[in-house]
Amino acid sequence: MRGHQPVPVITVDGPSGAGKGTLSHLLADALGWHFLDSGALYRVTGYACVLEGVAWDDHPSVVRVARHLEVAFTADSAGEVCVAYKGLDVSRDIRTEQGARGASTVAVIPAVRQALLQRQREFRQLPGLVADGRDMGTEVFPDATLKIFLTASAQERAQRRYLQLLEKGENVSLARLLEDIEERDARDSSRTVSPLIPAEDAMVIDSSRLPISDVFSAVMKAARERGLA
Image (tube, rainbow, N blue to C red; front, side, top):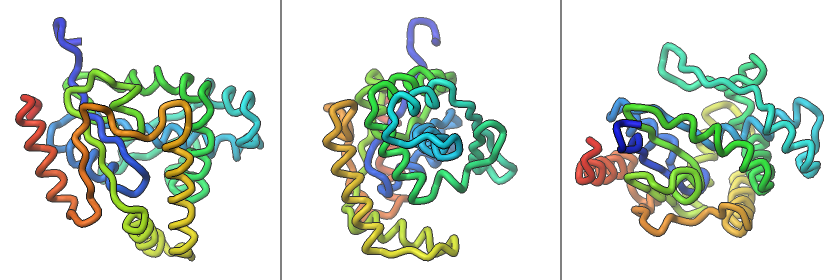
């Protein structure tokens, strides 16, 4: 805490593929703030279940994995965030489509979200935090100074993901990616715990036809107006 003032937080929520991660990294770099990729915690939880032989629909066992999650975040020489589970680098593994499905599946379990809630809040440290996720502004940091909800059409997000995976040499189907994204959107927006919806006071931006530079400029303008930059 800074006197009686809470550590400032900018939340960036929205569906997968909208550009939240890129925007959040740009904001954290520009402001010199800490960065939280909350989705990585859920991805690691889902992937840890695979490594430990726990089925995603075995809720009690999944919750135990979440409560005792041995995860660490470090930055390499290029500034890329590396994620380790029990000392094993899982950065690439959790970014696969299986990792995305696992994250979305375990995230609907209320006890899993509760287990990871405090861990997310521990990232709130001076001089400030940029938090990337799906319920950062509604549940984790409801008192955030600036809340962004970044979205894009399912078709645009599928196309972006398709190109990303092709660059990594993965053999993927655009139609299947679109189907996965639409299913994930439906699951995330309809879940009873922390559904994927904008906070009432969020700044909603549709990035379907906007370059990330324009999105970044708009958010930085809003940050300056709130005395954050």
